[in-house]
Image 1: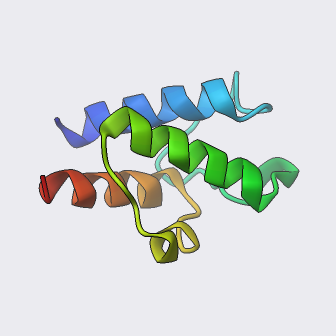
Image 2: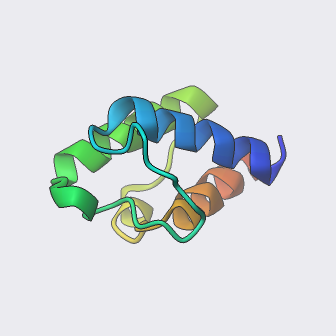
Length: 83
């Protein structure tokens, strides 16, 4: 799976599961975590959706450092490379 395919899938998951992002133009440097007043539970919910969609598990310590789309794609890409 290419980086672009990963990003497209992550964007689709964010738009589907994070109210307020449905019509957003999400770019690689777009801040996702703590954006638009989302609490940590909403972000964790989306991370769980991402993990499920890709069949991976992202360590919690990495969740806390992810803020942008790029950060999320990097984490997914790294976990996929371990498979």
